[in-house]
Image: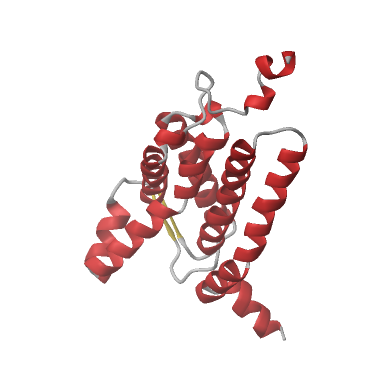
Length: 194
């Protein structure tokens, strides 16, 4: 029985399977949040947009962080930029390096894509990059402190932050800014005067 639990929560395959199994729950959460917002007077478009952004941040970020915090096979720290990536290229080749780079770019990509849509204060690429870098430092520190036999690397922080920044640029046209009419019209001063 314990071995079955390890498969579901302690392996890469288990994380992917659990994430896919949770997709209907994520869709239900978006729908429930949107319905609740509409019931309180929000416009349907705003309600769906905010609900999708909130659930998207959690649903598409937690599995990556979960995988990062699974026990690994090699321990260490790398505080010199690009040194860890060069070691991966030398030891394991370009295919593994490509997988490492792409994986790290995706860790906080959902945060970078959805956070500016949800929070006007984060509608800036430098702010998103700083937020993702801070989150990445916390994850790398957790790997080190918890002794998970993983390499805590500054390269991971750089790639995680870069991925969030690129994702933020991809969603830029939909950002919720304070001076645009993309915020909830039902909450504006004009709507309350009617």
